[in-house]
Length: 132
Image (cartoon, rainbow, N blue to C red; front, side, top):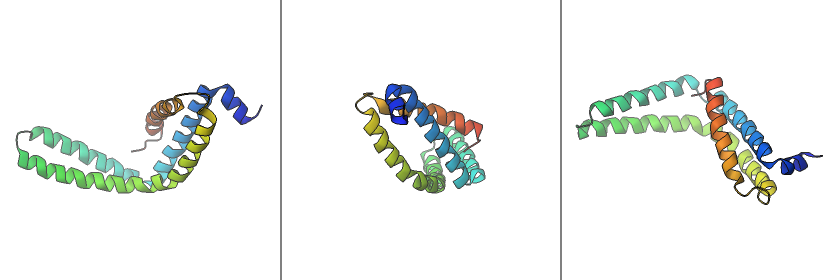
């Protein structure tokens, strides 16, 4: 029994395992290619800005200034996350093309199995590997 035969015989299980494996690899790539210390600093800055916005909810001028600063922090976070995205984009496109070819006739909503398993495993792996 080959790999594809096993995948078609066990579509839900194999799809969930693929999702977990891909999420693990993507989490490790993100950890390696992003400055984790800076990303954690930026997340803390965002939390502090959110507190300031709640404290100044009645002052639109202060909120506008805080929102500008939040935008700058968000842009920096996006720049940090861009490199791992570039590394994983093409392999993911190829993988999804391959997966769709296998599961589209077998499992109607295969993408939802993948997404749910990916979200859950991403939360777990980010905690385990301390990825910002």
